[in-house]
Length: 370
Image 1 (cartoon, rainbow, N blue to C red):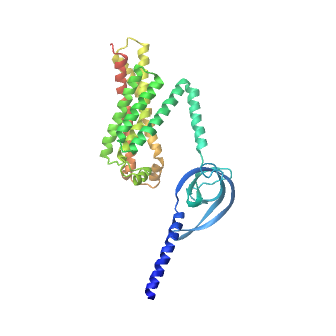
Image 2 (spheres, one colour):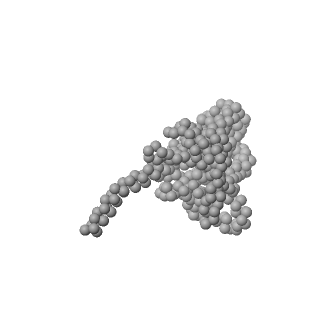
Image 3 (tube, rainbow, N blue to C red):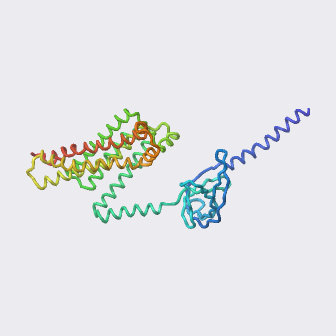
């Protein structure tokens, strides 16, 4: 009888305690999170904490910050939070009056926590963008305004058409070609109007970008590129494993080469148009030669522009390799290095071949009657 009584009491206590434990655990689970801006009202003091790191004790100093939240649900709330400091160069050395971005986690019963995320730099970035637009307007005047409009259209197409459709599973290569074509047409017509030279530049740009895309796909497959050499791509792979990462790599090459190819094509087409205006009787072959002559001068600097842009984005990796004295054979076979080489060479070849392509098209369009 005592045995059954004990079992009964055990289950009774278990049933009574379980809801309490579950409720307690639920109270410790965040129900939402957000990023909000805040200002540092005061730095009270610095404290030191001892942390265990692989069996060794490490002293970590921290700032106790008194902050005021400036946005979101908890706007105007004042809160004390901690900002850890160590020898890590990524640590934020915060001063009184600094504006920061805080990560807020919401818990049941109105409780929330706040953590330092980054300095709040949005106003500085906005000022820098406005400065860029002002310089465009001052130097370019009406053309500068057109350039701003074309830039806005380009950004809109990338963020509102390419990215959502790519995330939805559509072919990134096809999308990038469509977006690049629309951007080219809108930009060149806005900047130069609808003329023969504009049509020549549009066709030359589309041809050059298509060549870059074809070469990137061919040699990307030869070099077994998978689009996952970038840390951000690998991070996204854990969340969206079905995404076409190889296609996104090739799409990035197409969009990355677009600006330089467009610039070269417009320069060639404009040159041929001006030569035709200066000499109405000039032969078609002479027009094409004039375009090719200008293209040869542009070719070296613009190819360098593309290659230097890609080298600049990988500069720290090159420095690390040089510092540790690795084998160049090994280095060139790394996936991320092969990716940058294919990216820069494909873009450069597309740019170079857009020169004769644009020159031939412009020569025929400007001199159709001869």
